[in-house]
Amino acid sequence: QVTLMESGGGLVQTGGSLRLSCAASGSRFTIAAMGWYRQAPGKERELVAVISSGGFTNYADSVKGRFTISRDNAKNTVDLQMSSLEPEDTAVYYCNAVLRLFGVGYDYWGQGTQVTVSS
Figure 1 (cartoon, rainbow, N blue to C red):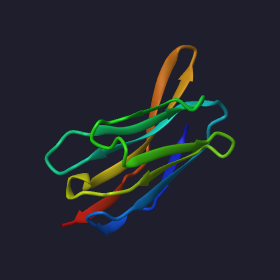
Figure 2 (cartoon, rainbow, N blue to C red):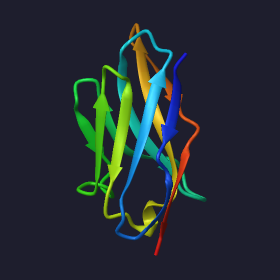
Figure 3 (spheres, one colour):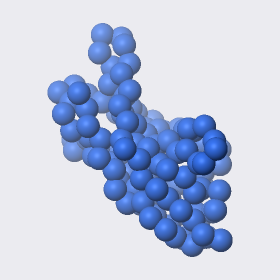
Figure 4 (cartoon, helix red, strand yellow):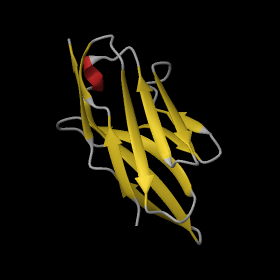
């Protein structure tokens, strides 16, 4: 069982910055991937950014050049530095961790943290 604890959400003006942090606990195995997803009201949850244990990253097109994901494998933490925020970035942001055991992937989710960007 993996528990994810997020922090860092809040209210910011357009053009501002926020940093989200997520700490994973409870895993005795290497977490294959960690990332951030978001869900805006009335929309489906979507990938924001993901990073593998080897440091490979993938970003949604809408955040490329503005958001940076980073990870500390030793501490099992993942951060999302968000800059040049836009009202369209307003959403609940969820931390995700994928644990792979015997070829099977297991997803774990945080409780979510609200990010609101005012215009």
